[in-house]
Amino acid sequence: MKLDQKQMLIVSQLFMAAGKAGKSFDLKRFTTDAAYASETMAQLALHADQVRDENLQSLVVIAIEQMASVTMPAPLASPAADEPSLARTPAAPLASPAAPAAPVEQMYVGRLR
Image 1: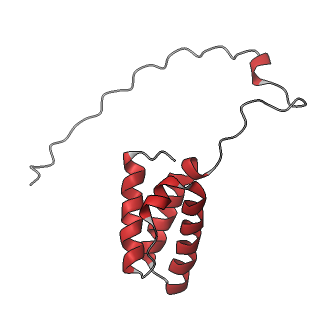
Image 2: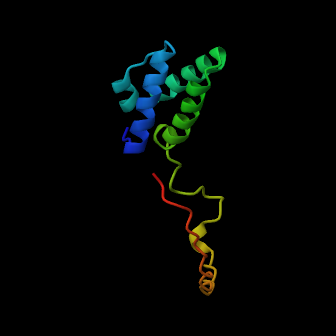
């Protein structure tokens, strides 16, 4: 399982929140085994719902969204024999480029500190 930096940040935040809620898991196995990651997120979602931990609930939802591409198998590349292929349909003509948008007026708000 290959995780990018954003997914690793989400996983580490989930690990910390789960530990605070009393539900620890094997972080190394979570990042390498997709089935274990899916099962762990399901268990954490159930636990967060039972104890009504909103922080853990939101982290689990974010983790599920971010990890969906990693834990879900990719769809098959070849279409079924009875389905029409997209390659056989003619391409639609390209539309002319849109006119550039009018410049947006900028207003000085103040110095941020």
